Image (cartoon, rainbow, N blue to C red; front, side, top):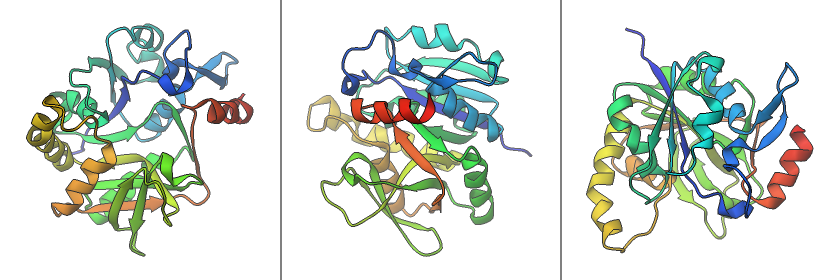
Length: 253
């Protein structure tokens, strides 16, 4: 039986790193489509998910970011079905992603960040192929980055098996970071129950936020197989800061 592929896009952030902008950062215009109309940053990720064969995409938004569904619509323009879910627990990206649990728990997930532009366009098919070949629960797309303190850094074996994920280290000798991923229902289930276990620490204020990389590291510790594909020819550009936005405008406009 063919596994249904669904995309999850966390779009609940405040966009505070960019300062004040008159719309959600996920709708920042960067370049143009083939028909000459403006292209917003999230559409780069949607194109990647199209290449993966995603039939559905779940956006997690916060109250007030209604310009996202107003602009992107129901997905028919992208040959996919879109759904918009409201962020309920403001404790980091994993909690946002978990909002989609009841809708995607039996699906293969393709995941990325809407403010990070990733190349090549074949990134998700290659991750899915690696997952099929290895049976891994998670497969990460790895890219060389210049500033480890901005990324979840990844240590691997020679065969691509992921040994350690270190979210935004102050200093690191590691050179590869992950910014896209695919995972099986096993990780969706693991994350759902793991977040339930640690949520009380957030409620009482012992913890503030948790990144996706920390939950993936917990999965590694629990014995789940995590694999990776390195894209030495690829790139990942986070346009969420003013300096990187300037570079994105230069490269894509």
